[in-house]
Length: 367
Image (cartoon, rainbow, N blue to C red; front, side, top):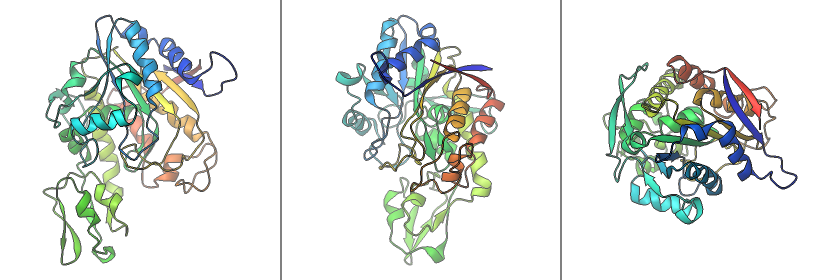
């Protein structure tokens, strides 16, 4: 059973700010012991796609940067390039987006270094004992780092069910080629519902979508399964076969998470932020209303345990009306299932535990 440390968001006096709670969580979880003097320490986070405004606050990242620097280590903020076209698809635009969102040296106290290089080509093959892969592609900057603190904004996700520490490791530490391997599944077009607007052709990063006789056509040889076309379609004419695609996708994601921690046994810490719990990943260029109230901040050395605790805390809340949460509003009901009814968020922690990434059983300790 793994210890997961929890700080709520109440503050009624000096010494109770969120920033101070992050510092206490860092110490309580023992992160100071895993970061050594002279380390190059990756602070892995998601800077948010341009248009999103619920990404992790830079001032929160600064608290971790300062704690790492107190240990005599050298922290850097990091992320990897996206599979889809957007404001983070190369290191130049990614860095600009990070600065626009407040991840500037003057604010966070550390440089932003995109871990997979200028165009996503800086990565190495890592052997894993996964369900789908014997090796995975992990960004070189992640592998080069001596230690790592993973900061995750917990929120929903239309394929994984939710995003937390596991997804931050898997998608967040892999280059575009690794992200493509994880997605792997292919959507299909329901021709009779297609209105021929062509929005899917504009967002497809691989030019796999074209219009043929006024209807969308998918070339499966070019498709990387990112789902951008599905999200862009106003008619709902593009779908995945959710009955067969969800669990294999989650299994591939967990295999990649295992590769992301390669060579860092006892040198990775995790902080999950249960605030602004929106239906979508911070990869989308918008931010929908939160589906439950803000809850608190968690810290642990186990990505599975911290994600399981995050799920349990989210589900213990009463869901908000007039949001994307369509069902399961009552405390104890699965909120992410109520948001994306075809997803299976709990399978993520089960699958990750099964391949040895961590354990689902945890002890919640309030700080």
